[in-house]
Length: 293
Length: 285
Image (cartoon, rainbow over all chains, first blue to last red; front, side):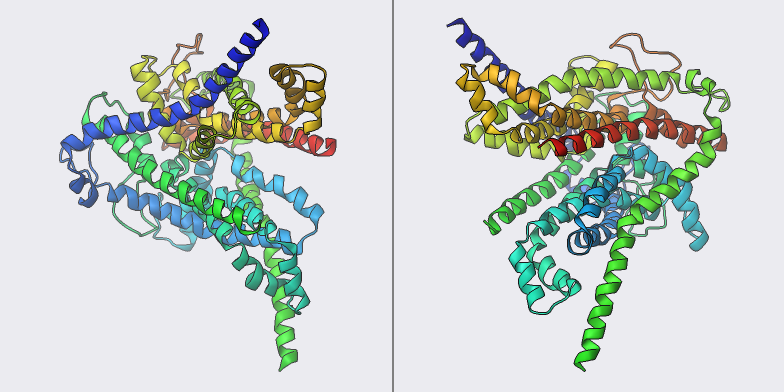
């Protein structure tokens, strides 16, 4: 009897640990909504979405999230332009061309790219990549989204390559062999058979990489500048949503002020984007799992 | 005509092989360039004084003592919170929960949490721990925040490790009259241990590199003291580096490079250890 009670208590404790993750999600939603509601009682959602300036820390306050969002999307877009082709080609090469041995050795080494702290990548972008870009384009500013986006792209290569690799490995052998038997070479097989068959998995990898890039903070805070502006020019300083949150947190902003609430309004915007992207990819992935069963 | 086609096809095939090799090493070559550049600037700055001095307005006298101490505090406290909860949650999901609606919801939820940007955890931390629970910008608030951030990583890794334990082990334990918990404690966890440890190390190395959530929670940029208790204010190595990078004087960039060498050293050592454990484990089964 005593043993059974003990077992029950242990099970309940373990269940409590698992339920804590649900509690975390609820807490995130509560915190973001609670402060954002206060914010939106002062600033109308219409202004928030349509104003083209973001100046909550100035005397003349504007709350147009688009100027932060454009910075976020611009750096993420540059990152994905670097990471998607590179990661996809890596995945194709490791599956269709290289030996198994090479693949097993290189995969953990590629993971190093994702394990480097982001503040380090920010430093690289600012002190190595930007000076290099300035030699090619003399007009590029000392803070710019090209350099930050490029370095962020390098960081997310392993995400794309490993997720694409999963998708490509899941393509059944007979599909590959069918193509080779028809006289196609590895290149033709890779591009006309493997990529189409693995397409939803590759899309999942791209979406997750974009979601990772959108939430990335320190690289853009260090190298992309701190000037909110609605632009898609990669050579000028911009500000991302995440940079703005860091900037306000570093300053002395009293809680209960509108400045404090802006970081939650910015945060909820960020959360909505990553939440949508993650769930689309989750749903696609479920569909993918069913495909070859 | 057909032979021209074959030629083109063969050329594409060969060309793609080299493009593939180039792409595989592209990121690593970039990283090598970056690292050699910081070694060139920062290595000469590393000395005992750099490690044992407090930050200073004078770049040549500035050191990372308070940042290193803060990082150590944060990692130990984060580990104490995240490891038991993470392993507990994973055990529950793998061994105890029936495949019910609620366990499916928990699973989807963990996947979602893993995708939440780290800075959002910072917003969670400042409001719940800093403000409602009145911890301010203390080590405690920072550790709780990071613990929640790495929890999904630990849970996912532990579940994978537990899944890999063959069922015959569990059945043998039950056959000897062991209860569910005894089986988990004495058979499942020990044989999953190296996988679990790998996951913990990767999670902690992620926590060591985080700056953004701690800045939001209220970690300080300038800390001229070693924290003495969990309620102390603090800074960590990545924030100290960020602070130096943001200054205009070149001398502080040298300090930042030196700090990065130390931070990278710690991260790479941890990751190398994790890879070593993973290779050992693959050999085992």
